[in-house]
Length: 269
Image 1: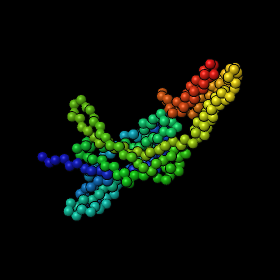
Image 2: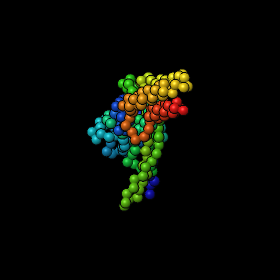
Image 3: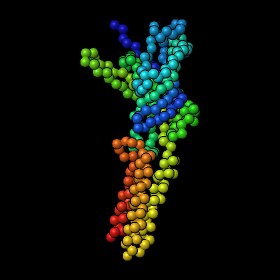
Image 4: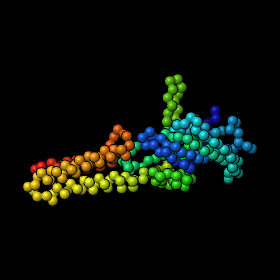
């Protein structure tokens, strides 16, 4: 009985376009080039029906109508003994991709936008190898995005998953995720929300300039600052993502209100 040969498939990606990043719905639109290659001993032209294929599956594509254009080339390989050639598969995918995005650190959050690749072959028959040194973000992807800063480093995560069926023996399948790292541009939030709220909060110290016996004056100054801070909180709320947990900007604005309230109570003494 012949043993099963495990194929090594090298993969790298080029992120040509990344747009419409929706951190609430967990999706983004993109145009991604995926290049996969493996060694084989075929003669002549490559035939997808007759020859071995990695049978790659892209797990996080949301659109059923996503465009996947495929081109395959056969290139020589420096192996005179086994007469190997390298099969190179070029695929361009344009569509909407799902992604788990967490915005707790908003507006200073860093996200990973990536593509999840698996195969219909189990891990006993295939190994997916990410070639990080060949992965990169195209300049077009960086220029066409006004809300995010891009890191040229592409990270790679490896894992496996197991398909459970009631009648068949379950097998493990390879999983590789190639990520583009992006950071939200926070200058707008710093200039228009964080700094103004800091200056509003700082005015609470004006209450300490009044005479100790002028309690009503100090309370009036504290109350004005507190109401202004609460009103500012409603303004900030319009810029916050609608998520069921507190973000950094949430905690910053609430901390400001708590601080002013404590000073208000101190002024009552």
